[in-house]
Length: 126
Image 1 (cartoon, one colour):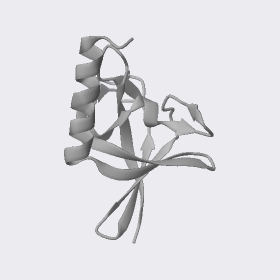
Image 2: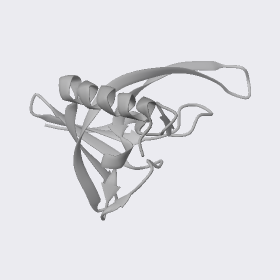
Image 3: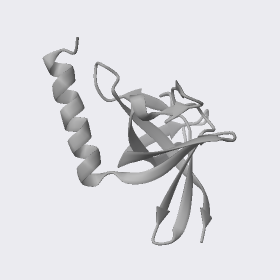
Image 4: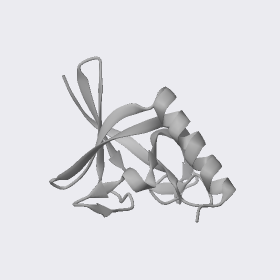
């Protein structure tokens, strides 16, 4: 049975993705799945062993956890997975990677129904 909070999160997630989601292809190796994702951004700071601070940002994709299926099995995002998005005829390929000391993704809600996946641009193809 779904709790009222989980039902509300499901409804909000569906509304978010319907209103502002973009079509993407999520791939791991030769397996891939087409799905709709929200787009976000996370900023971070990393200090190296010498105290030099690098400031950066990632492109984040918000994906419904239940949509992330490869070979019929629900998976969790992993470093090295790829997300491809076509914008104005150009395919942008983003690689899943950790955000500083944070893992490559984090749940957006207590029920882990929506995942925020951190990526960096690795390729563009016209």
